[in-house]
Length: 117
Image (cartoon, rainbow, N blue to C red; front, side):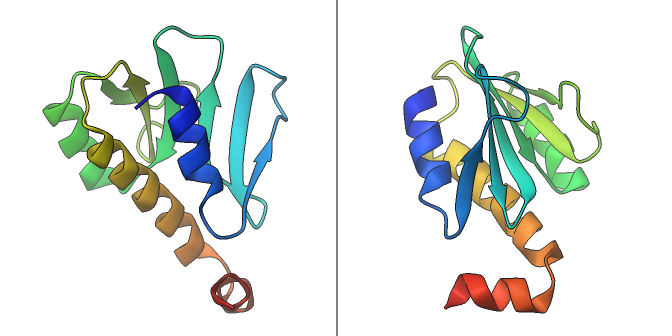
């Protein structure tokens, strides 16, 4: 998956917003004001940060050398994923889905209901 496909997939999530609070080279994807993904546009290969269940994060790091503890993030709950083509697109999409769902589950019920309508 390339960075453009990554960004498009993130933006296709219900209620997802693209922001640049850290400058134009870092796109942050949020749901109801909470971050679920960050894409560094100035790195080659592209690197993205995704929220992850701590146990699943360890599994992914063991499975793929392109998945590392989250750079500049809480390393227990975030992974940095290199988009160098080694990880199948379906697996990257699954990581995005998991990150999004973790954040949605943490939202107040009213916010979750708003996303479903």
